[in-house]
Length: 166
Image (cartoon, rainbow, N blue to C red):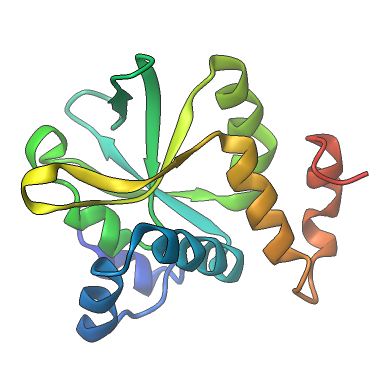
């Protein structure tokens, strides 16, 4: 189930992404990929992680400086699937509904002092490249983008409950 990103397009959890968009966005600088991530997550209301059925857990990375857990997220299953290599080989893209992430995962990740690896990509010999932020910073940026949408009210109660709105 869901090993191929096109499965999620059929389920209307993601948009049909042309190859040209995929390759162009993968080459963007990490700050631009971060902005792309925020906008696309606000548009589609899903974040994407990699889940390993073999290990029955989400794929995470370590931040060697502080030995913190970094939970990688992508804006589309195709980007996540592209990262299912090396230590994450065999993992599959798995959607996380934005409302669930804000209401349930955000508080837990903050309590655990986890970080978020936003739109990580492999950079040849230098390893993973992307912006790593505390989950609250990412949630604030997504909330700021959501405020531009007509249906912002759907998220208002959740954002208030987690302290992102007064």
